[in-house]
Length: 124
Image (tube, rainbow, N blue to C red; front, side, top):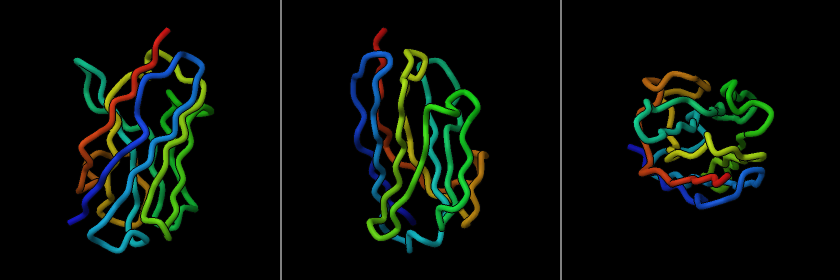
């Protein structure tokens, strides 16, 4: 089992930036992919980004492509989500998730452990 703890959320004005971090423990971090998802009030949880275990492959949702990037530091057991040019529609609770394998995926069911989430609010 993997334990995940997100940090870095908060309130930011439209056009601003935030960097989310997710610290992992419990399994060898470099063995599994990581993902980011978000859920806005009244909406389904949606895929944002994922990154393979080695960090060489990542997927970014079309809605945030060109604005968000993901990276990982296996020495620190941490994955990051850099969010630039934020828009009010990016407002949501953001979750990190640990993959069931080393491959980056866009599917929710490819991830077996989830963090508690961190709130990101973008004001207009």
